[in-house]
Length: 637
View 1 (cartoon, one colour):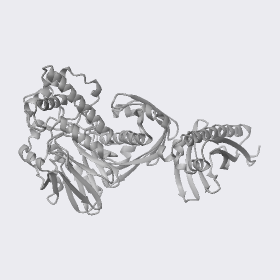
View 2: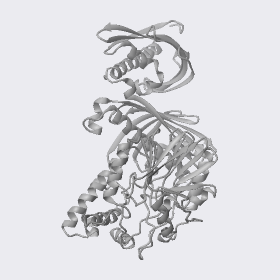
View 3: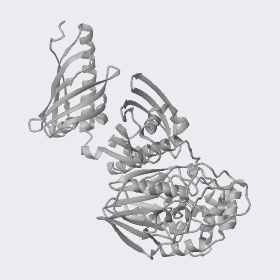
View 4: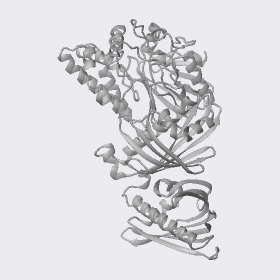
């Protein structure tokens, strides 16, 4: 058979959706990896409204092939014409078209035609026909499945990107960590098992079991492409609620360290939303949930990659701090590190996170404007604060510097002085009083920590209720919501971006801690934050999350409130109540010993004490140590 002899295949399907809807699904090739089962990745080379050129990677008869194509788009004529500019053997040429014809009743007949030549004989032709029959049938079925869901496509198919800066490491280091996913079970706490093979050069087949914070396990299978400066993946077995999930990691060296853009594209199955999120949940709820969960997982992976590259792994600890001295206890290690990562959560808005959190291992925030930079909290040690400042300096912004302290605990403000004498510090009026009274007492709690040159730099500007700060054209609202974690808690709310910097009023993955604040007050504060309907929540400790973190903190504190009421009525002490409590619903949270301090605060409120009334923190912290079998909570500052 001559290699130049043309061949043609035609595949058709009637789709119960209008032609314009079906056309748009085919015309937007960027969506193909999450809609069409065979497509792994698309990279545009050129794009105008009428013509586009791109490279495409797809599964063909059990292997991944790649080619370059040109397409002409005709929305008025409901036609897409394509021609491969570079084909892969056994093809020598390939072209064709998609046409969309209305057939009545809001339905569309889709016709997919391929015209091609092959190099070889009947065996090669049969191989190509099998590939076209298989992939065309799968593509048409997927097209019908998405078009017939009964929801606007944009409600179900969407993408988002997180930008993460990892100070002190190279892009090559992070690329190597992500590529060697077979080692993730030893390196990532949320990965239980990985099976990895490389059937073709730079093409990986990966099956992975991940475990959620609640202990649920999910199995996914992905095809991954290890390209220069980029690792692309497409889940061929996505988790529940998803029809498709694809994404990429793009690595580059920047002035502040390795810069990684983690992109996710998903197609939501609306029929599975209720089963995953509960009855009455909507596609909008699914979008928020997926944005939170997928973004959090990829950010956590990158932050662990940065820490691994610096060879300073951190232990599993939680958030919060107690600025007091305590009785003699069995010492716990006070070494190690949890280095920070800068993640862009909105345009010009960054979270600086130190995972997984821990006593005095806190988060910060950065808001960049044309006339200056707003920094939210300044961390616990000199070394950490200087790393934060270097990260802030690396992302630019105007010359002005303003620091907001979310509350008086030293792990959120000991680094104030690192930002220089020209920086104005703002906090609640009670925070200034508590900072002056407490001083550097926190350093005596863990004397083995390398605190460095830490100082008490009091806020020069204080307020009682709320204050609006303008960073360029951006508005940041500082709102006092205490007593909650303390008496002087302030959150920073960016209403236009719907980003909430919550301080320690909201913790992610760790037990709330309200010994120096109020259980009832914290519940009131969380209800206020819930009404803001934030898209992104940057907690005082732990991963960046979404509004679900607010719900998780509410659930825990309601449980504490109810436990306290029952135990107090039975005459149990807070320590006895904590020891007999069933922590199962919250066993996944870090720093379980906080239940003792929280019960003391709840008991005080049951007996009529006002929210925030001072308690004997030294004695209560000693009971927390007793609950911990004599071990002082580990500090990795």
